[in-house]
Length: 110
Image 1 (spheres, rainbow, N blue to C red):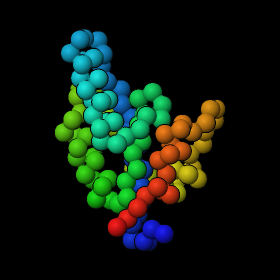
Image 2 (image 1 turned 60 degrees about the horizontal axis):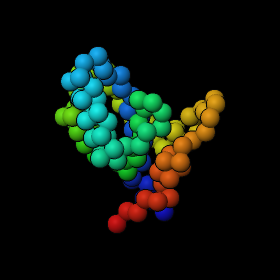
Image 3 (image 1 turned 180 degrees about the horizontal axis):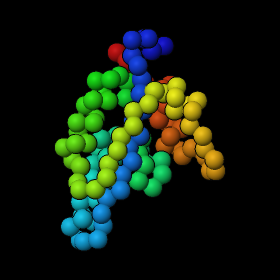
């Protein structure tokens, strides 16, 4: 059981990056690679998800995205796990394997 003082969150990251030049495509590729290194999983094209166990983790991740962000549009929406599970409507398709594996039951707090 996770202590109640831990407000678990998910970060939804959306981006639209330019790809008209070789440099822009390189920046896009580096950014995407860095997202995976930071623990984000891809849930749709240009939409990534990361689990955070508290608000400190959320702030830390937002600051890290600021550091690595190339030119383009990048947005982050922090939501609670409850909101994600109860308010996310999948109209067609299903949750990806990565989404199903990235759940709270695998979280261990020491």
